[in-house]
Length: 513
Image 1: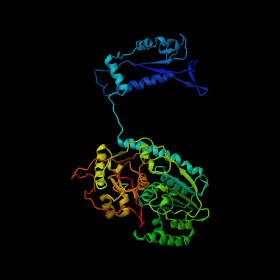
Image 2: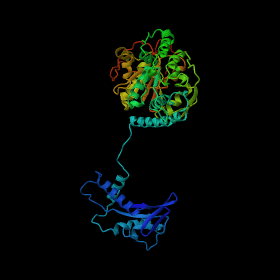
Image 3: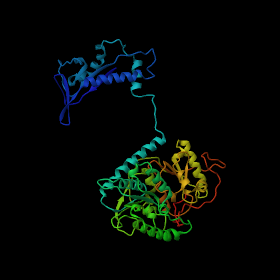
Image 4: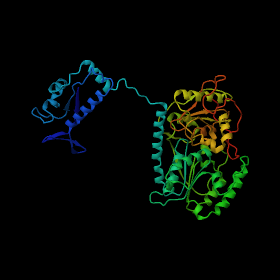
């Protein structure tokens, strides 16, 4: 067994010292020591392999050599640690195989010459034959998630470019990383950055699910980087001592409560005001909601207002805009969906986006009627579990009536307790597309259990992270088949959708699959 170190052009030896030209300068090297250490490492690796460990095999002869295919060394070249017969220059290349084969004979050693069987086993060990390792579905999903996080982190450089702007609207479609960017901006403002002083920041969103995600994420940050407030518009009203109203009274949410909040904001002492508001899901804020936010700023003229929106994910027939000018910025790269997912839902998005999320599993569809869709979706969850996904990887989202498990959990746990189940690593999550914007799980089963038009489908595309396999693919349900995930009831009962705060959601949806 001969280990060979090959050196390229630019090699030179002066007074026994080896150097090579790199980046237009000479750097010292020691090819003899390199190949010697490599020989010892390979020898140890081979002899520690269980296939070589049988006592009858014993130790075989190892040797080393240096080859300089572009440099001539001369026949008289000789070094104390590397005689000429161990060195092979450009003049030796025609006979290189013969010279290498003769090298082990020049070593006086007690080790035996390897047999042909030894050589075959050496090749198997060094080429890792018989050693198999394959990444699981979850491993591949983790890799895609890491890629998406890296791309989103790189995108956060936008905040450095726009750091001098105090009124900014960042628009982007599903998968553009708006939510991550909103979190990053709130953190940077609270901590102070690039010579700016730390600010008292409020981070707001519309949905309870996304607010829960924000609160869990912020809780992991150092205290000096945390916003002073994180939650929904309703949570902010509760913070100011105003009670929540009935979900069946839209006038309270769009007229009465904003008026009461504006009055309360005007009375806030300086220490309870905010230097900046960062608002995600801004497209779902009513026009009347912006007045109390601006009134709560430390400086109503120069206070920070940073909103993140996607008009294509609007849930309600209202078009509220802040009553102040905003500088628009468009995110046109889809970073957090795989190309397969983004490609399928691309026709639903009016904004032309560049797909950067990497490759993932194909999106698969199965034709089914709206009445059977829930049962078909349940079967799909079982199939995904059989394929190796964990329950914590999977979310089942409906576009029409809620899944019975969602109804049960919301009744038993309340809204806050229900959303905690999204983060528990022990069960499948059951939700509705209207309430799941900005949320991510590795696999999403999209149950289109309503008839309608295209708009709601664009909202339903938003939860899918780069590692999600969007799927309406399911086999037909087996009669009487029971599911094996906890908390699942096979009964089918009607349930209202997730329309929050008494407002009327758009009657919309993609075609039934």
